[in-house]
Length: 212
Image 1: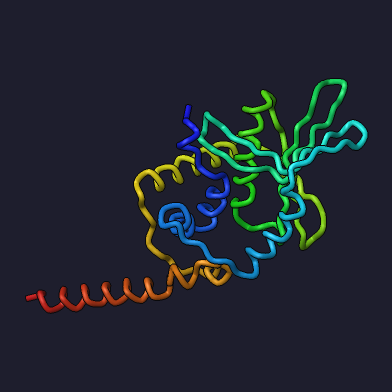
Image 2: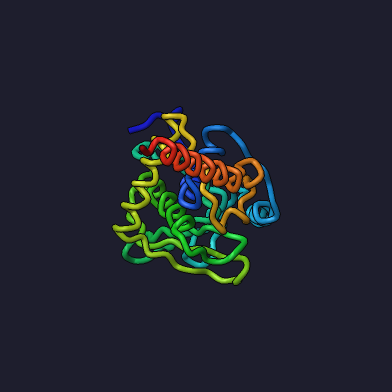
């Protein structure tokens, strides 16, 4: 069980899955910079982050809900939580709004799963699935919260906590996804790659010189 002073923001998990170095720059070195993608996401969330509750039939919709988990040491906010009242009990569904479209990696899925872990602890329930609303495709996409996804999420929480506790920022590794990162100018992954290549070539040169 963690104290509130040790809570990690849930969004760090998404950053870590996308790029561990990006997560380290944000969480350890406290760096941030906006770009068109991050601003688009921020504008979308302005419409759903306001704390409010409304009813539609048997569905209670709670927006901007603050969440936490003492078990996993997490804190954050749900864009929307739907509580559907049925004859068999209340079905809870967290819904995350994204400006873009479904991603090829697990960054969004792990973020939403972490939200579900918090809600399960807070509301004493089991959440079988969550939902995304992607602005680019203008529709909801269901996410099954499987045992495998839950385990991957817990492993990511552990990895992020180890990074933060050790004040360690992973080295830069350039990849095509770097082009969409708002921190690319601060990270300079291409420069880091060039330095590694130069070091490697130098080591080869010295090895050849030392060969009898």
